[in-house]
Length: 87
Image (cartoon, rainbow, N blue to C red; front, side, top):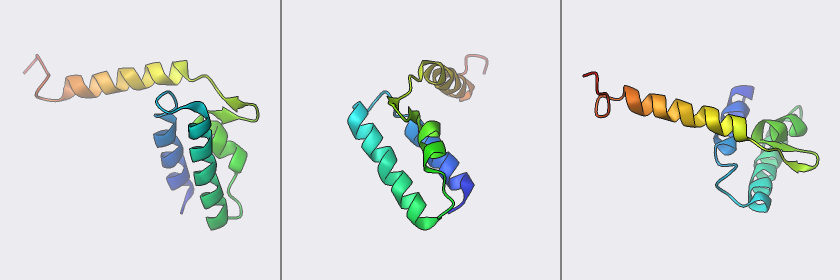
């Protein structure tokens, strides 16, 4: 796997930070991190956890990220032909 794969995985996981109970989410992130570390000895466990919204004391509040994702999803929905009132 490459750094690009780790980044994409962290972004996907971060999208579910508010959808999964905290302990389950942290366990899921740790499972991925352990798998990546086994694949690549240079894998940065702490950096991956932080990208997923977890620091050394637990879950980081992701309100800003969640708002940004909501705006992106709305823009994507708006740009589709089915929901675009400008068409």
